[in-house]
Length: 180
Image 1: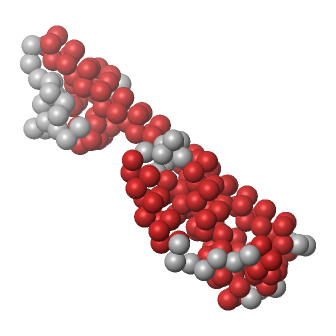
Image 2: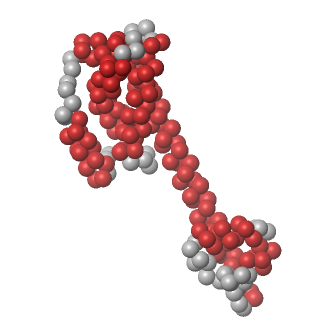
Image 3: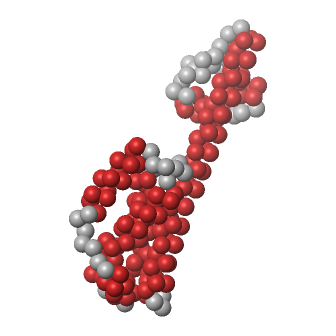
């Protein structure tokens, strides 16, 4: 299911694509064959012909943590690269299938990279929260704010990592003396 933002982008993008000329299946096959032969004009035309296919594939991957706009953009890049690599295929169907696979692979890689970034963000947030919690515990035990050095000794986390956590929190680790 598309988000409101994705649906709005998709509608805008589809309006733009309506301005492109349409071709018959035979015309598409002839363009693919010319692209396979290395004809630059045919490759540019093939990109235009296959843009709607990128949208269809992107919709299959929607809702997996990546904006539809980003999926389409990544698919368009793969399409542009793919049309230049068609010389090794034996027929138009095989070439078109290979381009579709390149587009799907690019979208899947984008999703994986977004998931990996989210995992890193979660780990960083957890580390900042853990340091904040330890600062609070130690401050309550000592009856005052604690220094980075005291917190480092208590947690076995180096002072640089604690300073980075302070920076990432915007200085909001409450029980930590940030003047040092």
